[in-house]
Length: 244
Image (tube, rainbow, N blue to C red; front, side, top):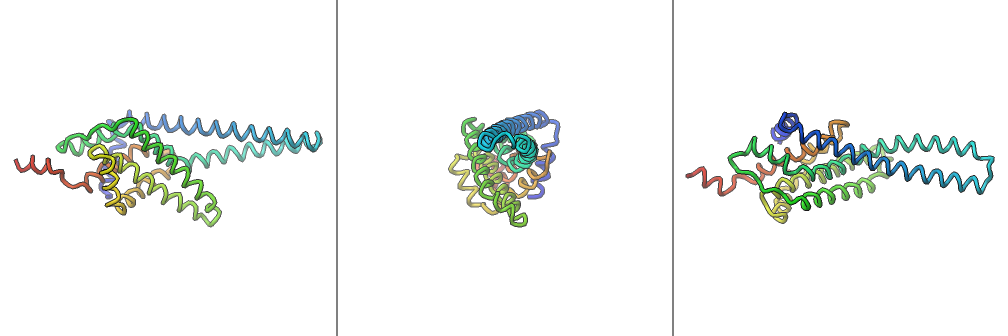
């Protein structure tokens, strides 16, 4: 497993993957920026609406205190959005990864498994749907885990384990579906659930590193291509080809 992680990391840094890396980083940053702007606008609107309502109810005497409070809330909101972007990164990378599944997998398969033959390109709608499901499930889990952040960092452990499970599952199934039906890919993942989860811990560790985590789709997909090959074993048609 460590060998597979090292190979995936080397692949991320290779010149052949540079174009994919730049596209993945650009898309991830764009998504984070859009979410941040929308959330900031919503917070600013609520603050302005609340200030106007309070001033109308209590009089203009509290105009200055409300202005100071609004200023402090805007600063807190800014910090909150930064922290939120960090926690939402696994969800963002899960969605971003769905756009580059085949491009990443093809690079890995051509370099390390050329004799096996390439996998089949996934329909874009299938890859996107898998990414959307993983992202929405990640957001739901993180919202449920947020209250536990107050319990001596227990929430951070939940975030980490949830990221390992969700990202490991998504990238493994996407790698497997290039060679299997969606049903077979899920069945293989369930048969090796513990191994896939442990592999997901590598991806969770990668996504927890600021800035570096922008490359998570490349590392996660490349890593799980290796893991799928190892767990699948030799393909029957490949064994027959070797015998001949």
